[in-house]
Image (cartoon, rainbow, N blue to C red):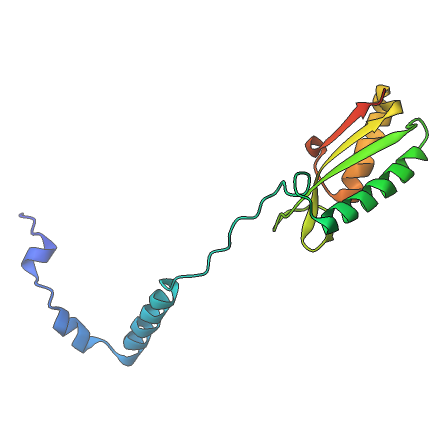
Length: 149
């Protein structure tokens, strides 16, 4: 028994295939062609936004908004038992798809630094960290609580 290559034994003629196609196959081919044409069109690319903007920039809106949030957070944390005096620094930036707290105008809180008198107690540090995580919807590794002098 001998084996024959399918392409050599039977020549495929493209014209005969096109003549045998019904209107449904032509419609499917047309739709597929249009889809490929649309997908190949160039799209506008957005410039990547800087995620660490506000600390080094001097934008009045971001500074005012950030300082207002810092003051509110300081005020609340100072009322918590064991925390004592507090100083807060918020890092903000523009993250498009981030889960960060939106401060308005697309600006998000991306990091928090807290100096607290009561930060020598690990339970107090954990309470501060959990409060900030809940408030700003940021991960624990983006929050640093340090002992104040």
